[in-house]
Image (cartoon, rainbow, N blue to C red; front, side, top):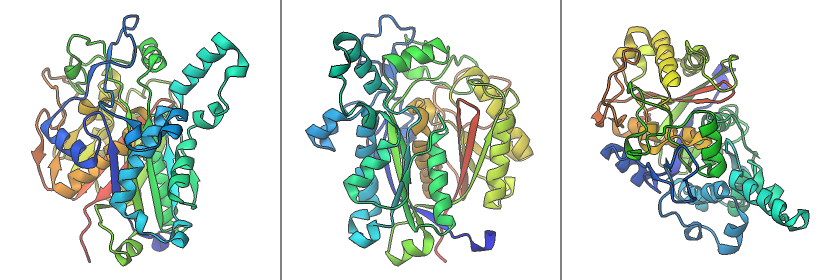
Length: 418
């Protein structure tokens, strides 16, 4: 089977993040070490323990979709359609013929789906009864409506679905698209994920889990992965999109190639509903499997974009797993958590962090982990603290782990023309 597998490259990208609404804006903000965290503006935070998040600042859905459709959609679908516009334009999918579009698939996920719509419609029911529930409630609630809407907007009639695996969702959707192309089932896929959980239920729910930082006096410094004073993650929102394509197909149509995707590793902790395995067992298995799938030796990896949420147990568990997988090389490669800048986009995290990882490979620059002040003896690797670093990056891995024990690792290689 391995001899028949085809090479897969990334030929288009789109980013909608708390620190930039385009790929270029996102990348430049990361290199400056900007934080997207600020006091929440969407609702009154007085009753909540956490009063800040990484919102999409100055986002207007009408810049991307018409008013009638925008009114019907949960924000996660608005984000999905918005980011797809840049992804499609960057990948030049508009240039495809109608027949070619019949073969292009969409695998695009969301970890939670229409949380805000659910809250609004529940309120409507409680106040006015069932007759006032919107006929669009069910279609616009479900996570798979994002790929459905994308296919309708651009006439993409290939394989179409979403994978839901909590905060591993982005990587799982990219991984499925990668495998379909690799196996010869299609030549081109649009993949990614979107999330819109900065809401009363999102903040309230994660507060109840004691998962969020409560550093309300300095939000921009609250997401501090690997720092000894970290006290939880910062909730973010947004979306990321990628065009994945079989190499020869991309070359034939003259597509721009950002990087090659060379492997995926997946596992489950089989340990706890919400907490990571304390020794990083599932994370270790995912990274071992991505190395095997990509036919890599540990010392070939130059950069690892960590899941790195800024929770006390999570950062330690992932660090332990990296040491087990990479041995002495764990201290030689660069690591970072871009969540220190974007916050945690839950199901969309894997998509935007894949983009950050690809750009690191393409530009030979490691984005930083910001807000480091106090060393944690259990987190003693090179996390690229506070400032971006120039370094040759031929191979990089992006980790994404999710509630429920889901673990994913995706590997990328610098593309060099034959």
